Length: 288
Image 1 (cartoon, rainbow, N blue to C red):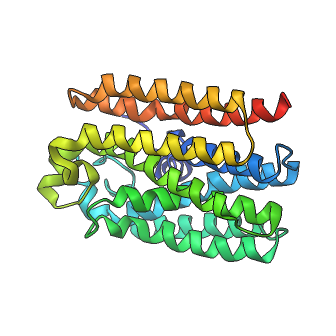
Image 2: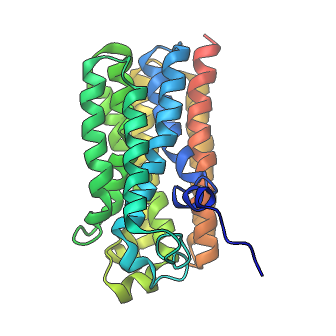
């Protein structure tokens, strides 16, 4: 007889620490913002706080997402065996885990300025409300982009005690990136989502889904490029954007036939796209 998973292991799966792709999709744009805000010299304190905070808030978001979707996920093959959906843990446990992780994240930013703390409250509201947008919002991936990108204005606030227009433009770029990669993700579950009535960009875009993804990639990279040039980044940053663009083209070859396994692979490959942009930023500052 197979051993019963421990409570700790179930919580580990609830917050997706076994699937860290979501963490890096939040981390890359946050680190880009931190580097630009600090002119390439982020403090160790900020690096630790924002890296750990990203892990904590992504984990809390997974717990609250599973709580919100517990009656839907049982009808989706990919999510039916999640700890909460399968009944291995109770709904109140997921809420408790999310609350504890959010509290730890808030304690983590306590040394930072008041503006950063205020933005963290807004970030928590956006992250907590995201799962419910799938009930009525035609492109919830856009809202996800805000939730996944709130580390951008928070990074600027922590470093400069202000949120310049550049930070909001970077957030807009992140929204387009999230639409691109999460539409790839949504293409995997499109048939199940149609049956249960969940709204996703893959359903909304319909037969224009691939075109919408590529347009979103182009918009995200173009806005990032403009922001980088505005921040006086040079050739190495531009090279990072070019490498990211080549990866987006590679994603097109994966998703053009809409095969679920290939679409999921494209989604996972976004780690490298985000890494290319971040490395371009870091190298550009180092080579000055």
